[in-house]
Length: 260
Image 1 (cartoon, rainbow, N blue to C red):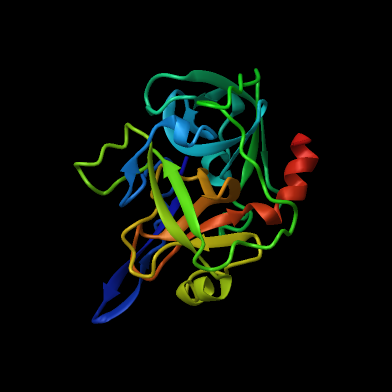
Image 2 (cartoon, helix red, strand yellow):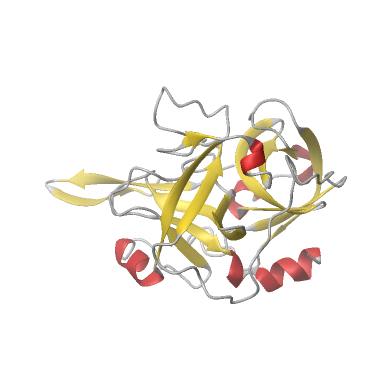
């Protein structure tokens, strides 16, 4: 499935206009841009989401039995084709594999607006949490106040790097600042409504961001999972911060479905 929706802009005559809503649509693949390699011990909650054995997205461990990811990664994909790799720095090997028993999309998920772009996956067998390479991550409470604008947030994943010298076979990370919803809405005013279910993060000048293949992965402030990577216009494009699902806005739903 799509790995972080990416919208691209083009030129019409001499005026900038939208030429394609390239939501890295079905089965397009996409990595952390402007980042650096890390070990899984630095983000033990990170998993690689696989469709038919192929890495497609990211996700976060929230309990031994449950993974939080993006809805657009698993929409219309049979559970029998979905698995996760946990506990490995490497995208293609190491760690342990777990099959997915059940997928639950958020009820607000809308492919047109990208609202509610999150999903829960129940594993067939629990993960052996060890606190070092496999660990769950803490989440905010429902409607907990967002991190203030400028707060340093970490993005991790195996998505596109846009640099041939930066391998996406090894887990990578980057740090980006939280962007206030009002400022994010100004950036996306022509294409999207930034709802209360969304949380933005990125540099005005671009250069660092998640990209295709990072969808569903974690946006972390301190030791707390505050966002789920969802979409953006381009990858690390100036003026367009990344848009994430706001975990504090879906916390009650997470608890209702997973009892976590």
